[in-house]
Amino acid sequence: MGLPAVVQLRPPLHRGQLRLLRALEQYRFVSAPCGRRFGKTLFLLLFLLMSSIARPRAMSWWVDPIHYLAKRAYRQMEQVVINTGLAKQGGVLKSELRIELVNDSVIEFHSAERGDRLRGEGLNLACLNEASLIKAQLWFEALYPMLTDTGGQAAFAFTPKGQGHWTHQVFQWGRSGEKPDYHSIQLPTSANPFIKPRMIAEAKKDLPADTFRQEYLAEFLPDSSGVFRNVAACTGGALDDPRVIPVDGPYAGGVDLAKHNDFTVVSILDRNGRLCWHDRFHRMDWPLMEERISEAAKRYRAHLLVESNSVGDAVIDHLREAGVSCDGFSTTGSSKQALIQGLMVALEQRLIRFPDLPELLVELQIFEYERTPSGHIQYSAPEGAHDDEVMALALAVKAWRDARKNYREGYLSTDLDALRAERRHAA
Image (cartoon, rainbow, N blue to C red; front, side, top):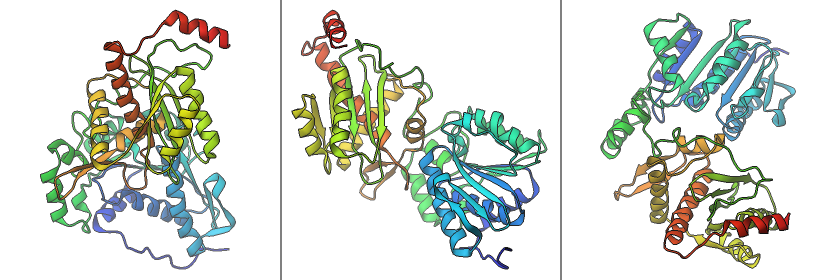
C-alpha cells in the first residue's frame, strides 16, 4: 500500500518554523534554542512525520525528558496518522508508543528517564524535545552512536538552561563552525508571527530581565534563570534503604494528592533537609493509597502536611484515624505563592538535598510563573505538564521548617536510643 498522494499541513508552518526546516534540510545536527510559545514541539512532530514519509523503512525516535511528555507527543501524532491514513492497519501500537507507517517507516516515542535502555539498532532520525532537560550522556553515549552507521540526523529543540549546560556546547559548535555536521539557529518568541508584539512587551515589563532573556529571547545566560535556582547544587545522595532504621528525626513530609491524571507524591525530609523517602503512584483506590501514605508516615514518625483541596479533607481524617500526625494545606492563589516561595528560598540557600529523581528535576526546571493584570504572581507547571513533585516537596519543606522550629523550641524531642530499640523490637 502506498502513501496518500498529498498530505497538507494545517496550519502551515510559520516563517520561524520554515527557517528551522531549511536548516534541517542542509545540516545533519541542528540545535535550536527557542523562546516560549515559538511552536517548537509542534514543528518537531511535523518534521518527524515529514521525514518518515519521505524515507521508506526509516527508523525515527522522538525523545522527551519524561514519560508523560513522550506519551502526550505520541497522542498528537497518533491522531494525525489515523486521520490521514498514513499508518499501517494495526500499526498504531499505543502500549509501545510505536507507529508503523504504510511505507514501512517506524516512529517510536521514548523518555530519557532510563537512558541505559535507549540503545538498539541504527537510527535515521532522533528528535530531542526539551533537550536542555535531557542528560548529556543520553546524546553522547546512546543516541549519537545509533546515528553513526546510518549517517542519521538529529534535531535539538529546547529552552536554554544556562551556559554550563551541554546544549550550550552543542550550540557553540553549530555557531562557530568548529564541527561541520552541527548548525545552530536561535529562535526567540518573536520569530513566531502569531504572538502579538504587545504580549512580548508585557512579558519584558513584568518579568525579571534574566528570565525574559532566557525564556523569550532564547539566550544562554551564565546561570539558568527560572523559578527555582540551585537545583543542580541541591541534587545528590540517595533515598533511604527500606531496611535501615530511620534515626535522623524529627521527620516531616508533604503529600500532594492525585487529581484526574496526576500522581500522588509523598516526600519526607529528615532533620538535615535530606529527602530520605519518596513515593509516587496513581490509579490506586483511596483505601490502598491512604494505607501506603500511612505506612511511610509511621515508619518515620513523620508529621505530614497534606494538600486538602478536593478529596483531601477526607483523606486527612482517615490518616488521623490511623494514627498519623498530619495537617491539611488548602491551596489558594496566595497560599500557593507563599508555599512555592518557601521552596525557592530553601533551594537558593541550599537547605535541602534530594537524589537525582527525573520527574522531580524536570518539574523543578520547567516550573514557571506569570504576573496577572492585577499584579499578583501565579506559579504553575506549563500547560499539559504536572506539578505534583514540586508541590509535595514544597509541602515537605514547609512542614520541615515548622518541625525544626518546634524542635529548637523544645516542643519535640528525639530519643535516638529509644527509637532504635523500638525499631528493632518491631522488626
